[in-house]
Length: 220
Image (cartoon, rainbow, N blue to C red; front, top):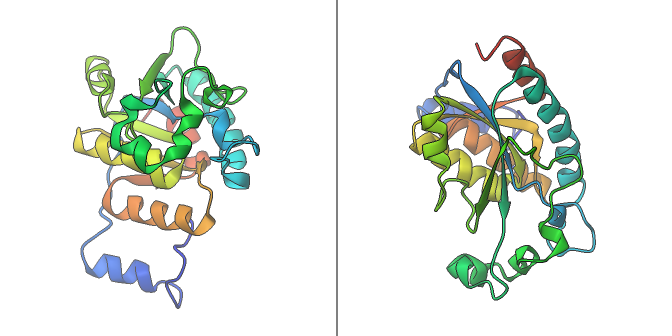
């Protein structure tokens, strides 16, 4: 996992969190699903105010590889998207706080999926208006009804919808595993700090290689 910035000498933040009793380990279960959070063109198109730069572009490439691995392994794939009414009214306070969410109003090309990351017909698409993939959606019911115990989370952005989704996954009783290379943010420091915090307070942060190995073993 990437080091958190601004921690002074190496290991200081890690040691402090350990002394505080943070950073216990969660063991993923045997029935995982892959969740791609908002792989939207908005984050990789420089013409959009939400463009998140190289961090998002690198994450998109990692997501493509991860998606192929998950499909070969036969695990359920879920992809979320943000889609808002033309006036943004269903985005409530979130839309008022982040006016650039107008990129996700109905008909906007920025709301389209990034090339290679659109769900297939048999895969679940979750449409949402708020950061968490769980808030105001049927995601939890879907996962429970399919016997899913572990959520492999990739997507955009780390500090926003990815973190919110990982937190809600944990609170709903699913083991969240955030895939380090397959998430990204507009600021490298914010990205690293959020991965550090997720890994110590919410779930696990694994590299693509470890996730690939886990899936190749059938989620064991």
